[in-house]
Amino acid sequence: MQELQTEKLQPLELAQLPENPLVSILIANYNYEKYIGETLESVLSQTYPNWEAIICDDGSKDNSCEAIETYVQKDSRIKLIRQQNGGVASALNTSYRESSGQIICLLDADDVWMPDKVQKVVEAFQSHAKGGFVIHDVYQIDGQGKLIKPTPMLKNLASGWVALSGLENGGSFENIPPASALCIRREVGDLIFPMNEAFTRNADSLIFRCAPFVTEIVPVSEVLSHFRLHGTNLTSFTSLTADILVRELETAKRIHQEQKQFLRKIYGLEVAESLTGVEANAWHYHDLYMLARFQGVAKSERKKVHRLLVTHPQFHAAFSYKPLKWLLQFGESLPNAVFLALFNQIFHESTLKRIARLIVRTLSKR
Image (cartoon, rainbow, N blue to C red; front, side, top):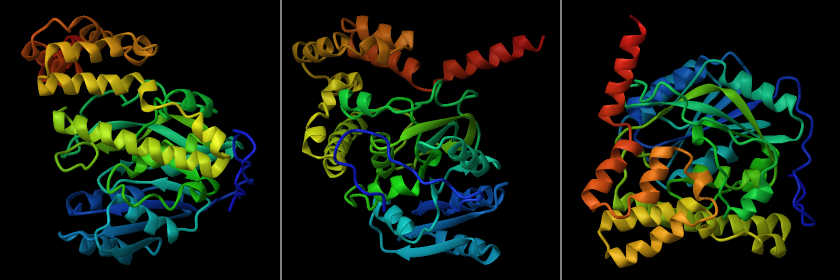
């Protein structure tokens, strides 16, 4: 295990990778019988051959294990571990403990990889000696596997050594994709795992919120996976509600606490205490303001949160999408029903957007 650094904030020193490093694919499964077959087919389709897939079934009540067993029989590189339900962090801890790879890739049990995903990740690690965290873009798909949007999820990807900005930004790192696009060197994994098993969901957040504090990020510009959004996702959603906002605010607070503990373990108390609070990030006040809107709190109280949002130093940078920025900045005087209707059209994948794209495609063919 990499010796812990305590003197100053700096990237880990990483050993040179072998020519064909073993890639460990960690999959936490719970009741995803419907999707796990397609997920594992995408693993079997990888052009890079030196991998192992370690699936921890977290006490599924459906026929997931039977479906997975067919793939275990088909390919010895696929391993299944069964355990009682403990949540995502617990399942990933189990998979990590049984893994041996120099490179670790997360794969959600309902997502799908492109055939050259692992090959591109290995090449990215091999071409960046200081990079211990590789990310790439994703397409979002629905429960039936259809594209939700024809464009990648992120316009830009985080890159390089961003630890200092993370300290100043309440521990938040922008432009990092979800779990199935996260890949780390084992030296980084050994510092993060085992993860706090109280995180029965959002466990991938512990990885992408801690890894940038110890290593450089290497972005791969290509889209290498499909990220599935459907009604049973634990951490993803296609619409916003008060319950989701309460959950996200509480999760952000807990992740921030984990980051402080992580920084203290790696660098010591002084660095840990230099991590700014969650309020240093403008999205914190976005969530508070939207919660006030959804809950219909008194206008006088809502205005206080609105002012904190629009006067935040990061406001204009965080909300670069102009329709959303304008609504947040100038929509305070609108009645709740009107504001939320406009917000839904701007923020979500609305029917109007789909119709607009269909018209554009139709006209372009003429």
